[in-house]
Image: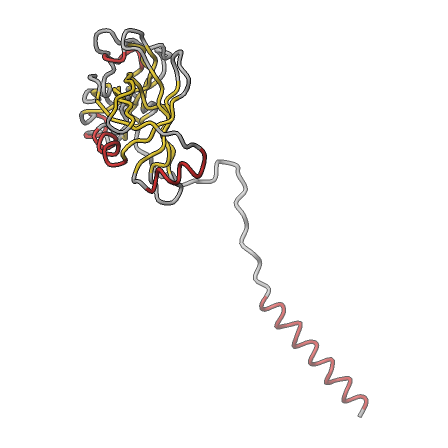
Length: 233
């Protein structure tokens, strides 16, 4: 993956008040960590960064940060996006953490797994795809980071699966993931099974009808009352 150049501005004011001011300028407050240097507080043009984020969403993007003070260039270094903080309501990016890297040293990053093809078990046997692993840890040089790892499931039938050991990585890329971990599998269709009482199981008896009994009891009570009234008279 080639580096993507991004101009950023140094900022001296930090804290909540400083961050609010940066956001009013339609910029994003950010910090660069890592390496043998102290953290650098910067601000990033929101539109420029969001264009990169949309074009490479979910990827481990290698950036070349040009740190400026106005028009004056102070320094530059390679970096990865470590963390993005979003507003809980508007989903707007509030803050960015970058980490410095060396292009000549291997790093460990996560890359997404992309499933391709229509499985036999889905097309012919009404199964469904069960995606267990959505991304995989890899180790490589920053310039060798792939945008994704493809998995072809065309030949998979019911109960077939692809494991980490089955993945094909580009040259220079390895993984320390458990090779037996399942990436994707094809599961059989769900069938509704009507439960029937097993042999020897007691079937719940229907409630006894007592309507007629209550009717007879009421008639007897009325006759007794009439007899008492007649005797009193």
